[in-house]
Length: 278
Image (cartoon, rainbow, N blue to C red):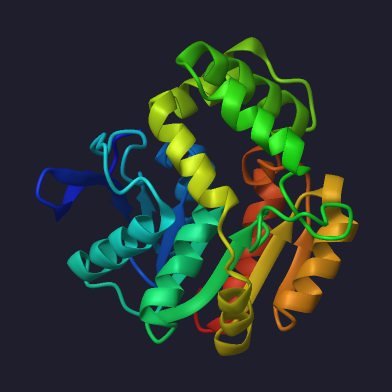
């Protein structure tokens, strides 16, 4: 889907591919670890009728520049600020999925919330790794995360195996058709395995609990949580982002699998901030 596609230079030799479609209150979608603008195609189709919709391929993702530096979420947060400046975006609703949430929290760490209308965090803990994995909302036990880093991100075929298992086991609840699974995996493999490993480590070692609290207190915030870890995740969000609204839906890729429910949920949240028009 190339509709509205263009590139924005964030530093010499590094350009980010974005889609910029529609008119109205701006919404910015940020995909997760190794994924691309394509995962939000159902949201673009739905919300471009009422909003200006911007979707970003982060550096080293999708159709953006593959670069050997800046593959960390501090840089991704700075990149987001440069995109917003280049597009002259004001009063933005930021929507991040998975590690895309880290980009948003990092943006808040660097720039605060004054240019943000509302925030939507899709299914990621503000501290993805903890020694207390049975109590905290984490991506998994330390040993499992270490195994994923040391084994599955060593080459592109292992990365393919890792994403395929994650897609079928965590991202989607129904049985994926072969073409659907191939599409999901190919999105991820546009990021080389050695860069995926950098981003994986950067994300896992992040701690944005302070920014999560600040965000929930400063602007309207919604956290959407997958069903498989809902009880633990809800307790974590209620403690660390106490003013965030919370919704539970589907698996990790719920906005794609259950797009009608998700889009309605998101539309209602944004409409509550701007009753005259989402």
